Image (cartoon, rainbow, N blue to C red; front, side, top):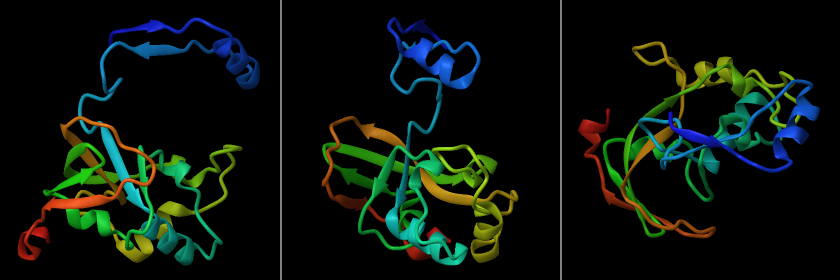
Length: 166
């Protein structure tokens, strides 16, 4: 990908923290290194249900590295938007697919220590997909760019008929 080194003290500070040389690179195009799926979304309801199944007080959404966390959503409500469109702030997103998860979700986002068995827990209550993926959250493609602000609501613009949704 095309990019340039970021000047300033940040790389040195991160290098000290990591114990190895770190260089920060800013991508020269919107979307960074991603060629598809520039947005990811999850509802707090999905995180709450996972916490319930884990027997944990809560699950820090940062472990899933989602771009957008939505408050007030039902558990896995975002799955019902796949193949549909939503409005969020000034933005319109086409919700294209579920996000397959990896082992990094088992690690505390502050320490990097493995602390929650997120993958086995998701499999236990949601199962695996046909492709043996462990889905949690959804991808969104930007149909209309715009600002998203804290507190903006989600509007389902194009719903998927239940028979087609799965």
